[in-house]
Image (tube, rainbow, N blue to C red; front, side, top):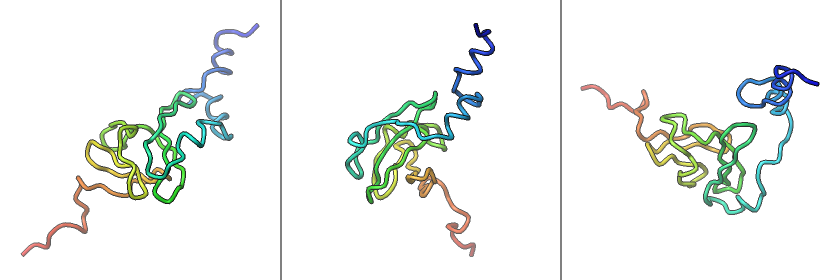
Length: 118
């Protein structure tokens, strides 16, 4: 019989648990392809190994699965608009591509975008 600690070590997958780290090294079915079949269609919520994720297909038909929460203010990307090769957060408009990269931040001023001083 396993102790409570041994059982926890073998069964817990959330956060930085050893079994979760092991499971994340392998392919895990998350959802059916038909659920995200349409390019620029609605994002689909997925919960996998204790993580809240969002699956979506971009304008080019590429499949992406990213953290459900926007890296800016943690708003849900499941409510975002899937447009022009990315998932746009409805809160401040940040856009995330299928690789999880932030590709547009309309609410932020980039250093190179500042107006020149007179």
